[in-house]
Length: 434
Image (cartoon, rainbow, N blue to C red; front, side):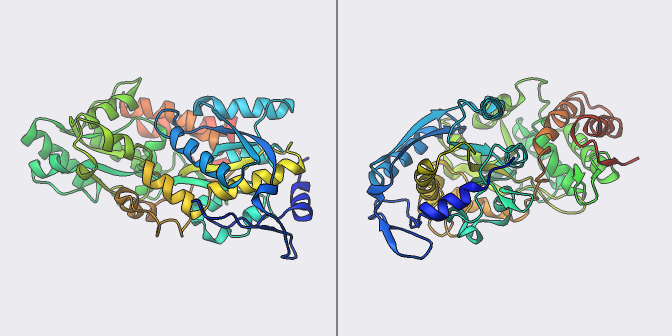
């Protein structure tokens, strides 16, 4: 049974009203639900384990800095920080939660994991707690990722989408503008190749990176409201067909079947390819690459549009709380998550890493120009299906993407294979398109 006693416990024992400040200001007193002051930050005590699934080399040091700031304000809360590889965290958490042994108190969960873990009863329901009292300040898409069956099971940490990243100098040398449509990208890539001898575009052959093409033709993977599998319907097939058309055109890099992501980023960072469809998580890495040309050389725009629209997928991560947490730990966890998701803390992290805040109010505090440059891409972002099976949609799509973009397999037949796999293994109660 999914536990919701957490809400009652917090309301009865703490309802922490930590102010939304990520800096070094004096901590606010905590309050009961009646509003009377009951304790200072020093009275919040506990020891928490946090599994951080961010990049251990480039991102984790910043989150450790934020923990240090938190403990200055909350000296009696100890955060046992553990960096857990993203690729291992989902199954590792599920195994520990099922065994009721070894799960962390707090997890940085990929957005697709939240409804899955909630459906399994592994997460505390946060409704009625101070962690959801100002959810209206969160962007709609990140907020949507925390919802399951009408309840809230996470707090948005960071959001993202896919956009167009480009080398300003390479485009200027070729005399082309950042493309606003796929057809403009096709023409620009050919021009860059002809004038510079270098490739214009590297398309990553992965399922997530096919979504802007599918969305661009008005397609999607599923229609949850109709409980229908749509990954092989006409708009989706048209989107993939457009992606293949580009991949076969002059100036597009032929990706390898394995390690394509690394090859793509190496080529872009070295100045050997002018444009990528990529996410904000690579902003800091590109800007620091000695062979790229610095942050001033990095251009960012919304993904190019198909015949219907421009649209990138929504990704990101949420803080979630393991359902086995005690009431005493809940006080400390509430303080920690409130601090880490405050507008000030989110702005500091965004400035250092180039990742996108989930709070609307955080954007006014951000000074990183690249973060602000991502806002047009977020404006056209398309929400994914927030269903428990959502995280299972990408393995079949990844396999298909390699066939489609490396081997140039037939779009309709390949996407029908994906649809059949969804029907057999993922959303068995959904109907399929013919």
